[in-house]
Length: 288
Image (cartoon, rainbow, N blue to C red; front, top):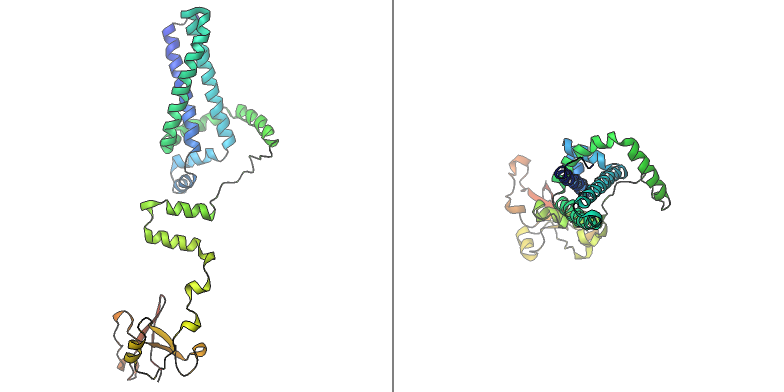
């Protein structure tokens, strides 16, 4: 070590801090990815998303690799810093190197890369996955040994990593996602999606008119007079029977400005009017 120039040691020290920053940023970027967007991109054929999604299938192995690299480079950097400090300051350099490396690792290898990864997770995670994937294969025996020890300790807390299922959204969480979609989902579509989520809370009275609020009309009456007498309604059960057993429906006004159909085409002198019930439209003739 004494034969190596101090300048070269300082360059290696900077490179070691950069490697430590890479592993720190990769950890934050991979763990803060939007899993649902990642799965969507993976199913769409995005190679980088597929590679990243495969890494995240076993987070214990991924975290073991990242922490192994991060710890190795941090400790090696601290050792080199101690050698450089002792060369210039003697025994006092040990304390100085410890203080300097604490600040350097904290700022340049932890706070800065993790903050960038949290702000731009996809920009950090996708390139990092292309580097971590071969490293995971190369150091698989060592990673397996580390995970075996860690899983034994996790077993004390009854945490089975192998059987851990992918998280899913609850109805309340899905409602929050729809509300926070912003301009990505139009307001009309948001109302439709929220209506589906609230379908279990809807009662029959919310979508159907009670029988006691329905108006019965005689089919023999003039439809112009019926229209003037009941403006809010458009279609009513009618005929000589009660509301519960109406013999038909009588349109008080042509639906959406429609005109009566040609009577000759139906072989009758009675005009045919379009009847709209909810979103369904059909053609009926007034009963005689």
